[in-house]
Length: 348
Image (cartoon, rainbow, N blue to C red; front, side, top):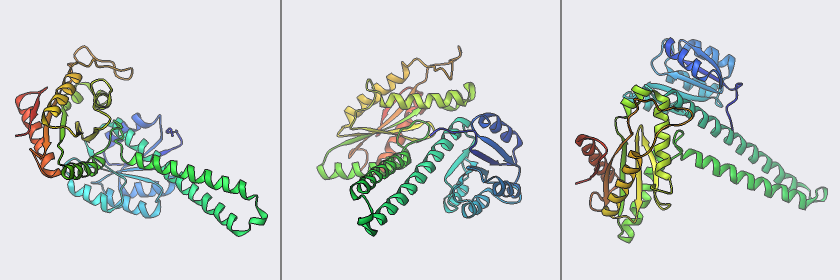
């Protein structure tokens, strides 16, 4: 699926500068509209019936979370995104209860927001396809059961089997989409935490080690500030690609996830601490030696090489639970950052 200009995005925010910036950034890909307060946003949403509504949490007249909750009842097909400050955990909690599809912390990357919108639109399209296939399958089943004398049974059975096959593929695509990070296409934090529990149970049962790497891009905020979010997004995507590369990346039995922001987590099954250290060093060196640049982001002369710091923890030495292992790897990463940058540190 590709975004088309007839897909409508409504931004509800009293920040006029943000409205103009997003209009410039998204106007070529969507029909873009904006409203300055919640009441105006509700009126425009009812009139326009947009594909996507993005609302700020703190808004005049009607707060963003209340607006989106009301649209959930009135326009259930509309994708609903809530924006607020990174530290506004109350807004995040309220967004979950209100049935918001996605929460965006401010400040944010416009390009990552576009990726999130694209992912949610694709997910909605797959859900619609799945619903249509369910309806088609139900109709065919009823026809076959009602009167076999009036039907060419082999032909209708083939149609049912083809519909079942299409439905299964749609379900698989939808499930895969829900497990991926929109920007890097790595697994997301949800998938990581679920599979980390499974790996821990397997390792405990068979008394085998496994290791965890926490990888963080050094000085990422400075990179964003100096070179812009387009550069930041390109760096995040490229680091994700390096983690999966056949030369210098992870094995097929490992898996990598974007943990959040500029942090990544890599799970290494059947890997003791020494093997994890070697893998961490190879990843650190691969990133440090990479030559940066792309067609969408020409590297300026002032650009410095990108480096990463990595914390390493291993089961069962550094932790017997998922929480303990994550905390140990995070603490080792913090120590690596404290020592400078471009370092690998093992949890104590």
